[in-house]
Image (cartoon, rainbow, N blue to C red; front, side):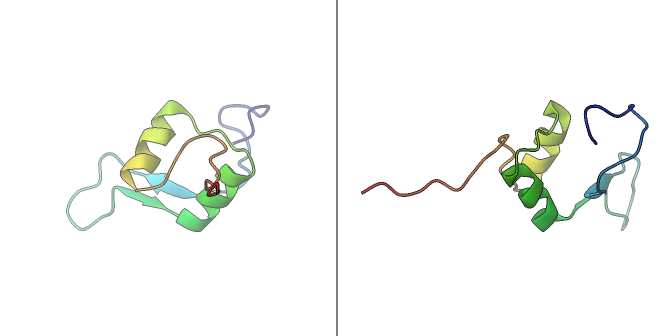
Amino acid sequence: MDIRSARDGRVIEELGFYDPLAKGEQPQFNVNRDRVEYWLSVGAQPSETVKGLLEKAGINAKAGAQPSAKSE
């Protein structure tokens, strides 16, 4: 979501879903990892709740996280 849009406004891109009521074989959380990593690399800042979900999915959710370059 663009911070300038209304809470229930138009989305830029859907990256996944979270269904807290999912049971059985239904996935509770699904995310398009490649697109999330792209948006984080260009400066997207996830909310604290989304950061927690991304970390559970194994995605480094630090805002603007870039792979660290090795220093010699």
